[in-house]
Length: 135
Image 1 (cartoon, helix red, strand yellow):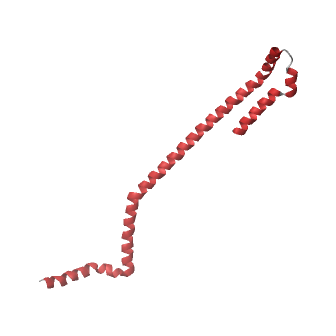
Image 2 (cartoon, helix red, strand yellow; image 1 turned 60 degrees about the horizontal axis):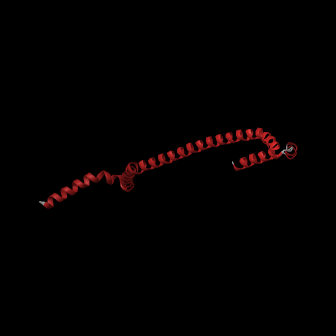
Image 3 (cartoon, one colour; image 1 turned 120 degrees about the vertical axis):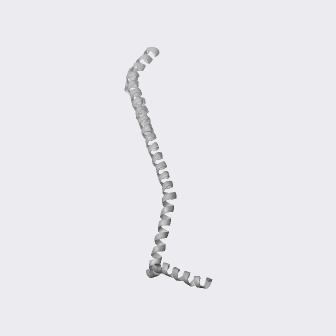
C-alpha cells in the first residue's frame, strides 16, 4: 500500500509544483528574490527605521537646543556691550570733573596739562579699543 501511495503522492507534488516549473529558472529566481526582498523590507521597517527616526529626532533636538543657547548668549553679549558703552559715555563726562577735583586737592592747575596730553580721552579710548578687540 505504501508503494501505491508514493507514486500518487509524487504525482500530486508534481502537479502542485508544475506552475513553478513552468516559470523556469528565471521565474523561480524572481519569486525567491521577491520573497527575500519582502523579508528584508519587513525587518528593516520594524527594527531599523524606528531607531533611525529616534536618532534623527535626538539630533534635531540637540541642534535646536544649541541654537537657542547661542541666541541667548548673543542677546546677553549685546546687553553687556550696551552697558559698557553707557558706562564709557558716563566716564567721559566724569573725566573733566575728576581733573577739577584733582586740581583742587593738589592745588595747581592740571586742566591745561591734562588737556594737552588728552590723558583722560586717550585712556578711555584705549579701554574702548581693548573691549572691542576682545569681543
